[in-house]
Every structure is written in structure tokens, then in C-alpha cells.
Image (cartoon, rainbow, N blue to C red; front, side, top):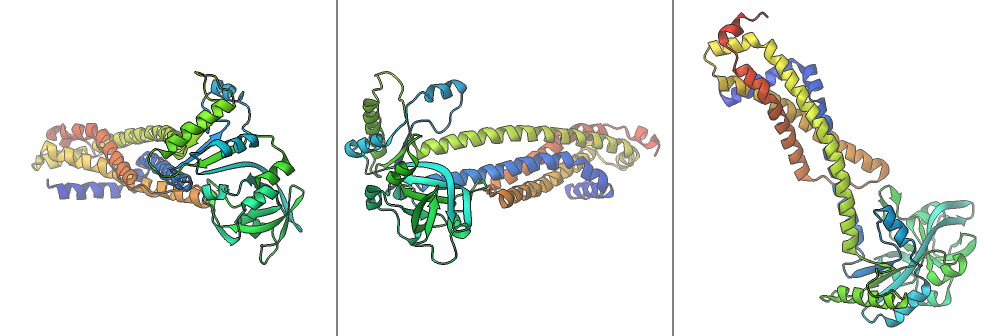
Length: 408
């Protein structure tokens, strides 16, 4: 039997039992769809995080009291004994860190903003030094940014996100409008370029005010985050990290040989941590999906065994007319592979659709990885071939005389 004829016969057989074929490949569809959806979402999140973090530049370090991620309860108890990084620490580094080209600090909280009859209860209130906008790569589309004068005088000038303009401020030019933030009156001097959402959370619902003003109105009940740019010269970032570490260890009286009582992170740190978390999540989901693929493969094998039994006389006639064992085996292998490949195709479509729906509903980023589509189709086809070998071999081994005696 020619290969093309074997494919034609296999497809005709599947078409003749459409409902059975659909139910048979359901497990493969679910398994492949799960894998494609997870990889698409994780890939989109990876690209989004890398893009967002990269906006700070590869020459930026961040000094915090706690590490970005805490993995164990023991570590949590240990790092929570650290004392806060305060505004005086920032001023100290500002005076002494010669390898920090730009040094900025920030505090943040969630608060209520009011303008007339409009209000928002979950707006992010940022208190930061004016040069924090440079490190965060914040673009002002209307008005002006905060300045060192605002820092020094502790003015009640604020820069707002697009959501505040759209949902709280009255129509018209937002510059010069007054806005009540946690009970204090401020004047809008700038509007930041729209940033969109991140994992379903809007990045435009915020208010930026001078850090000195924030400390006066809100107090300092939490640790300050300090960021610094070291420049793009070779080794500049490592040199700045070493100097900041030495200065902070001295200021906080960390004894030689003891761990730091603070954490210094870079963009690479954040990206590495995120990828570690996302890869672990993806591995777990893919492992669960693999179980579905195995179940789908077992169902395919079972149905192919039923098919062999149903078509015993057909196999006998083919063999009596000169069909070889490998011809019969090829026919049934192609049928099982075609079923699983069809399930893989529907699974890919379903997985991409699920990922796009998630992106549309909650704003979770997604990006289709071509290699995942190819992998999904390959794995699906491989499952069909693997679980189709035994039924195909059983069909090929049938004695034509015995097969012809079988009852219809």
C-alpha cells in the first residue's frame, strides 16, 4: 500500500466515526491546550517583565530592607529583624557615594484621593525625590515633572497618572487642578504617559509627590527604597554596589563575617527571580497536562483495539489480496497518529484562544511562542504513534484465514 493511500484510508475511517473520533481525542486536546495556554501566558509575562524592568536600565541598583522574594519561613523571621532604611540613610549615601551618578529614594502607600464628587480609595501614593522619575523612565505628557525645588521646599505639587485624570479630575485641562490626597490639598503640575496594566492591575492609578512632603504628611512608618544609577562604563555597577554595601555596613554596624542587614538588587536579580518562579509554575502545570496526554493516549489505544476487532474481516480481505504486515501496521499507525495530530491542532487553537481570553479579561500579558506550537503538535503526534503501536501490531499479526472467518 502506498503511503498516500494509507493516509486516505485512515482519514476515511476517522470521518466515518466522527463522534467517536472527537471523544477519543478529547484528552489530547485538553492536554495540548493546557500546555500551549500556560506557555503562551508565561512567555508573555516574561517578555513584559523584562521590558518593564529594562526601562530602569542595566546600570541601576536598588537598596531595600527586605529581599524581593522570601522563600522560607526561617528566612522571613530572620530578615524581618532588620531595622528600616530611613531618610537619613539616603542623605548619608547622597553625601558619600561617589560612584552613584544618580541617587533617588521613594516611599509608597495606598490612599484616598478626592476631587469634587469624584474619588478613589485605592490610589497608589508615591513619595519620591524628583530624580526618581529619571530612574523609572517616567515620561511627562502634560505639564512638568517634580523638581529639586519641590524636594527642598516640600511643596504640595503632584504628578498624576492617566487614571486619575480620567476618573477623578473634572473634564478639561488637568494642570492646575486641585486634588485632595488623604485629606491634604495638592495642585496637579504634570500628567504621566499612560502605562497600561500589569497582570490585570492598572499602572496609571497613582499620585507622585515630593518625598519630603510625603514624610511630613504621612510620616515614615516603613522602610525607604533607595535606587542608584552607576553609569554604563565597564564595571561601574559592580563598583557602585561594592561602595554602597561598604557604606551601609559601616553605618548599620554590621560586624565582619555577618550577613548584610539590607538587600542590594539589580535588574538581573529581578528578572532571574521572576523567571525562576514562572518556570517552576509552568513546570507544574505542564506536568499536570502531561497526565491528560497520557490518559488521551490510553483512550486512543483502547479505541484502536476496538477498531481492530471491528475490522477483522477487512484486515483478512486486505491480507488475502496481498497486503503485507507492514501495510496493515502502517494503516493503523497512521490512523492513531492522525487522531492525535488532529487533537494537537485543536489543542493549539484552544490553548491560544484561552490565553487571549485571559489577556482580554484580566490584562495578563501573552505572547505565542512558535516553538511551543511545534512542540505541542510533535508531542501529540508522538503520543498517538506510541499508543498506536500495540493495536497496529496486533492487527498486522492477524492470520488472514482466521480473520476471514470472523463474524461481522
